[in-house]
Structure formats: C-alpha cells, structure tokens
Length: 250
Image (cartoon, rainbow, N blue to C red):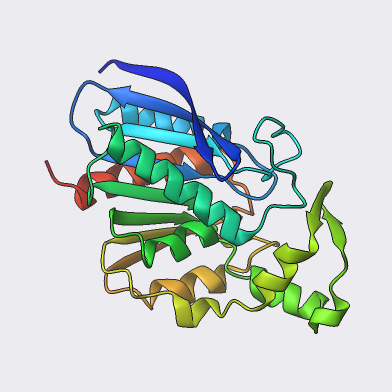
C-alpha cells in the first residue's frame, strides 16, 4: 500500500518541533514515535514506514534539545527536561488531530528509552491517546539521578552524559518523579518490550510497570540489550504492528 512522507515544523513556546509524517491512503489510526535520549525521530523510521505500508499513519519527530544532532529547534540540550519533552509530544498530537492526520482516541504513542518514560507519563493525562507501546522504557531515570545527586544541593549547573550536556533543571525535576505512583491509570491497551541483557535499564522496571495497567502485555527479548539487534528490531516491528491491529480493530 502506498504512502507519502513529508516534513513539518511545529511552533511551540518559541521553539520548533521538527516532525516527519508518513501518511497512508487508508484510515486515520496513527502511531506517534518518541525517541530516546540523544536520539532522533529517524531512529523509528523503519517502524513508521512499516505501519504506513500497512495502511496506518505515523509520525516521528525530534524532541527540542533532545540530541546533540538536533540544532534547528531554537532550544539547547541544557534547556531540555522531561517536562519539555512531554510538551513537545503534546504539541505533535495536537497538530496531528488539528490537521486531520489522526483521530482522537485512535492514536498509539510509542516511546523508546527516555521517550518511553515521556510517553508513559503523557498517556496518563493525554485524553486523545488510545494505546501505548514502550520499548525498553527508561523508568529508572528518577532513581538513577536520585542516587547520583542525593539532594538538590548536589545537582550541578550542568552535567554531560553520553556526549550531551544537560542542565540543572532536568535533574531537579527528574529527581522528584515517583514513577510507579504516577503510572497505571491509563486504561487503554499497553505493550512493553524489553531486553533481558539491558545494562542501562533493568528489565524489572518494565515488568513492574506492566503490572500496574489494566491491560498490558510484557515481552522479554532474550539476548537483547538497550538498543536491539537487527533481528530484535524486526521482531519488535512485527509485534508492534500486530499490537496496533488489536488496539484499533478496523
């Protein structure tokens, strides 16, 4: 089935979210992909193209200040927070519904790593969201930074992680998040995929999260780490397409 790909730019509070739309000729069920820390929307281009070829719409986008490769948003990596990324996601969802690319209640939000934490938190109050898929979601982020910086006074003005400089506000806000008291109220179907060799985010976080939701499926990928192999990525893409079919029966 054919589909078109186009670039869009979404203005938000003095910054700009760069998005890529994969629009099929059938229906308005739409997947929105949230990349991980220091990643980009194109990290999910294969999954987006696969869903578009199957007759769905899809959207990938770059979080403002979410990567050292992202330089067109007018937002620095030191300004980025989990909250600013949630704002970016909200702006994308709003744009898609206003443009008629997506229908309220028929939107799947997919988040990988840090994008998984952002997507999961957004789904708790994102009324337009119908389903949620998380790929090795970094639900450990608040715990990690509470260990690294036990008090607000310990938080530096900036800190560099994986070649990306993050500002003080990111850590101050992240430390205050109680993930497992926040999550689990989303009533739609949830799919969580995690590798059993993930050395960045223990898969126990994904397992625990799955138990909170009314309807959740947890799949453990044997031999996979934080970032799947080509074989693992292909399996995830297949399972994601099947999950979207179940979530939004036609």
